[in-house]
Image (tube, rainbow, N blue to C red; front, side, top):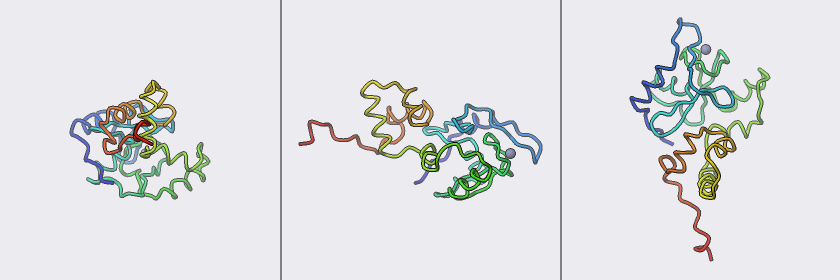
Amino acid sequence: MTRPSPTIRGLRRFSRLVTIGERNECWPHDGRADDKGYPFVNIGGYCTRAHRLAWFVAHGEWPPDGSVVRHSCDNPPCCNPRHLLLGTVKDNSDDMVERDRAVHPRGEALRHSKLTEDDVRAIRIAYGNGVKQPDLSESFGVTQACISQVVTRKTWSHVADLPALENVT
Ligand SMILES: [Zn+2]
């Protein structure tokens, strides 16, 4: 999956919220956080976690597919590039288990990081049936801004709806 580069506005908003400290200190991002304590940022059309954007800023590219950006300091809001390590999804789970911080089973943790196409269809159908965005946000573990983008097709516009029932014969 190719991810777009963040917009200038997105980067400005991001940098305003990061407190840059001494070289080896944590540089926390002061944005709203998800249920695991990771602040998220909207960077022109989609949401990502602040520390992933910090990685992008430091390296000029997104972390490679299949990798995760880990914190050597174990501090989710930290955006100091010196505290960010590239790992595999498995490393990250091992880390969490080692540090006794795993609150969700692995599959669910992964699920929180990204919606699937099936989720997107389900969200649109539920929204069309009157389910409110905050409730969808909670059920799918993503921000309400992300839900809003899904239902207005600002994101995931390539995902076709399921065929309407009357067309299935
Ligand atoms: Zn740190």
